[in-house]
Image (cartoon, rainbow, N blue to C red; front, side):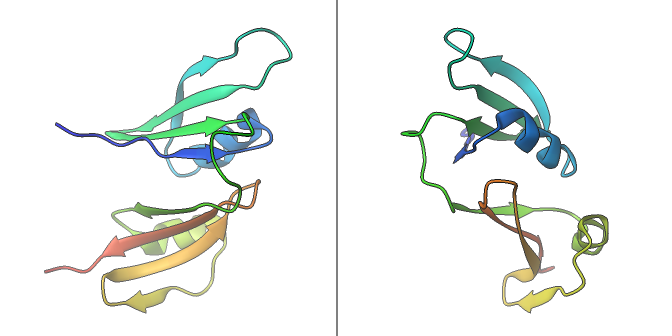
Length: 111
């Protein structure tokens, strides 16, 4: 089995984790070398992993992450997004997390 864990650069990992909890992610673990050092969080939603890092060298700000969900209409309503785009691969929306990372969230086409 192969699993992925995208790493997103964030200024406040705990604040970002609260935002991602709206999408069903929960903090699995926290790492900090010592108090006052950057925080690194591992989040999980079922078999999906996401790492949030306050370390400046781990990732570039303004990253784009695509997340698949079973019901984009429900997610769009929960996030307060009015327009859903119909694309060849499915229906999706785009929002930003507290650090400006772009999240495209969509439901794939039924094949």
